[in-house]
Length: 327
Image (cartoon, rainbow, N blue to C red):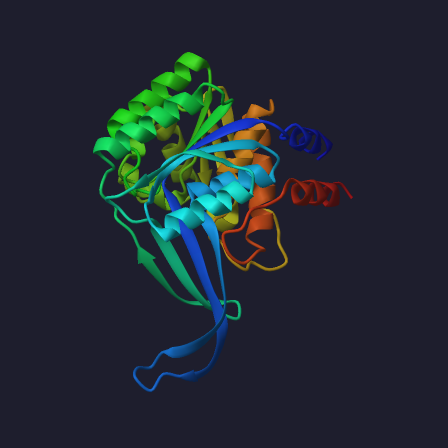
């Protein structure tokens, strides 16, 4: 793991732009002592509220924790929750100047009620319509301006409307002209619109739904990976497979399977995909191969699922995990 540790050391100071759907992850934590007399549901006595940036914001937080210099482009509502997203990002040292506060849509907010270590319910408040008009013009201008100083751009899609075709065309063409590496975490609506990316990272369910295939075994996974390489004309497809790890498909070599890192206990898989795309992107920007990017992403994801909530993985944690692997 020594070479991987040297690669992680080169994460520091890398300039990464994140464009995508911003959210606020709100957690209400408490205890359950009784069942409601109104319905057969637990009554949670809330003791604590805390919030973290979600979606593309969580990717930005992971990148920052791994040592990168980060800028974010996206949309929040012109509301207190949107201001909270920006405050949290700004406090982490992330450039929020590309975030647009919209007067026509609320901040996407996911509220999780947690009792002990168990999530009781999640409440989502969001608008999934495509961003248009002045909001789209503003985020397009911001994305193009920030792209000029970036070494890589992560396109983080949650199907919440940011990736209008005109924005995506400007980003992909601009990145090609500037020689900026492009990595993608896709969702269904725009799945096949990210043609020419450096790395494309779907999970197994997303790939199956997009291709219209029932993927049941490794042979079908490999067929899906090769088909995605062909249709997207990207350099790498990193297919995440849950507790089986991930599979890397490359234009310049055979498929490589990277097993999941063994963890003592899985607390929460939410945000693990954000950790994967962050670590893989930084590895590529730092000069690593696709295989090394997948390996580091697996290590980082193993650390993430041992944490409760969509919280970032820090560079020191990855280095410690690599050192333990060497011992």
